[in-house]
Image (cartoon, rainbow, N blue to C red):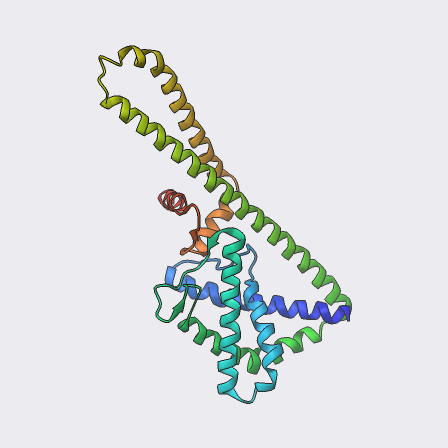
Length: 269
């Protein structure tokens, strides 16, 4: 039983890798450069692995009925993509992809074009890929399966932990930078108000408080710069990769700051 579970895990990784290859190749063609199109750092897209196993597990009885296989595969993968998008949004407060510009989309999470493509991939997986891949996995000796499966599982868990930690830190810094920016704006409004007042009547007040205000403003600006520098230096490569992999990513709470960071990274290239 344990060996069967590990072989199933290897099938999951195989389809996750194939999905990553297809997704990265598709996006790289349009970007005219290599794009690691994956949520994780490693060369896998787990949603494709789950999708492939769901399609194969549920639709093998339909393998000789291509029209029905196509439609059923399209439905299963579309539902899975929608649920994945929704879960990622709720967990990380970010929208990772947006199909709003495509016709026949649902909340920007799924669209008809992608569903058709997934339907075609479902047919290919059931009819062509699975027999070949399953044959390869089944021919791996049991000891090698255990060693390979455990090693890859450790790598996958490490990748997941690092990625989730990076995103959590990134969200935290977005929140901190947004708060600091709001503070800067508030202090700017105070200075505007003072400038509009009768300076002769308020001269004594200004002399008493101006130095304090200048120091406070300078400290606030220094904190903002420190936070910005921290954002640029910590997990810099991972943040850049995620922004490159998901160019349509939006933040539910801090979108203006996310756009600022995206622009800053773009200008530093």
